[in-house]
Length: 231
Image 1 (tube, rainbow, N blue to C red):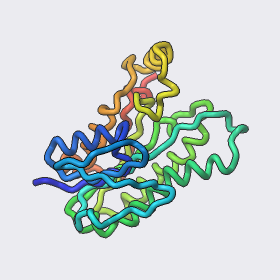
Image 2: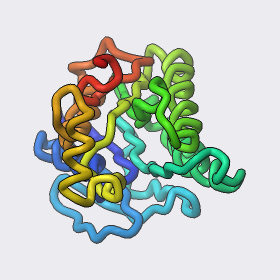
Image 3: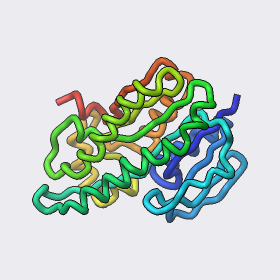
């Protein structure tokens, strides 16, 4: 049976790959975009949505939603002493306040579905201490706490999980992977000696949306080529 999925930030990177995966499985996908050019087609409907400034338009969304994925994020790496309070707050608004606002908005429609699923995104930097990652780790650490707390609060009706990737070849990480040397350096650090592709992470998110993961909630799924566990 076709399912209804909402992907916030579905026009690039991991979100775009996830939209393609879900649509190819004949699901109905409702995705948002901010600046990237998109086109509606049979299984995908887009709406423009800036998570910091706009309200999500519910007019074209179904009354029952089987899955929600929140993709917007940022990677700002600098020494802790160079960040201002406003820098931290800006990231927190994008990655945490944006997610909680969307979840609240769609909660009645998620509750109307059967075995509905929420998927969020963290990073391995929350569990592994890396230089210059304080800003991203603060926001994503909050996402991991939210994942576990919401999973407890919404069980058994709605499952909540998060995916925590390592550096992945997307536009968000392009400044760290914009030369062959940088790519080779990052790949060498990874136990599998390669950089993750957006589809690698999107496939994990797709799994957490489907009935194949019906006994999985409150989990942080590490998709990182072994970086978080293999030294």
